[in-house]
Image: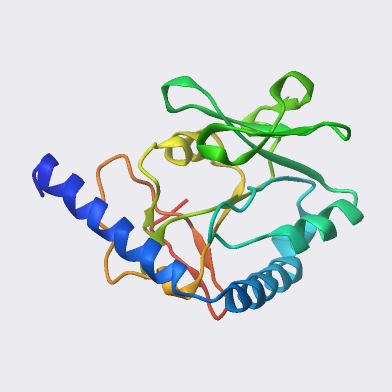
Length: 198
């Protein structure tokens, strides 16, 4: 097991590598790959069956799920998005139809808490999990806040799908004890399931 300082440094280096790889994709590539990922999501039985979906708003060069969100709304599904709270906690929130968004923590578009409908983890059927990097064993490299690790432990009954570009794939993600793998990873070219998760 790596010592804490070495582990933190290794994670930082992996994040730097993944950010660079993701940012190296052109805007046209990210748009095309995001559309492919959205199409794959829509075709999945567990997505078709889900009624309440906890998704995310793309930030920077992340996979953009806007096309998927449009489809889900047209299907009458309930879409929730993260609001980050103190102590690394996160809640799934359905934004208000009017004036429902604001620039939140880290500059990410976030539901306005005062007008949003807060959901319990038990109300969520499907969670779409963003990441900085991932590996073949579905281990996830996040931003380091631990928000999703804490939340996924409370929503074990929901389907968890990690969303990423192939450019974010690592040989092996550096992990700590609290880092949870995600059962399924979906990219523009592959979909893999890992028995070690969920």
